[in-house]
Length: 143
Image (tube, rainbow, N blue to C red; front, side, top):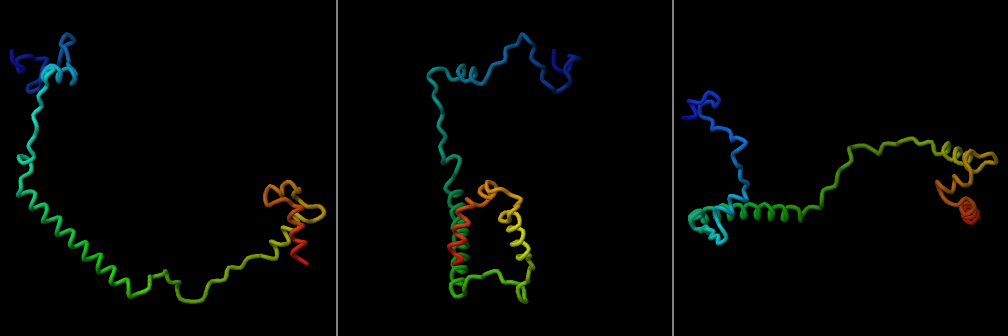
């Protein structure tokens, strides 16, 4: 009976294996086909890659190498006479960014150094440094 005659199998598709059929893994097939004394056929590179192919590829690589060498040489020669390019600032003077420095100073003094400061000495130490050490440095530098 051909696959076309069986109504369960559509034309052209191979029949599905039944549960009774054994399906072999790749290892099983290799061991059956090759046996213990496996003689593997070695591939001759000359059959796959001819001398003509090698010479054509070598010419392409040589042309590519020459192009890269010429471009590198031009870049080296062109850049040696000129100083390296730095990003130029757009025309005009620098833009002034106003910062409330005096207000920042007032906040620091009020938050950390006033009699009724918001933050404790431990919080000052955690954020900056040991407060007595800081005050000693300030005293030393201010004289």
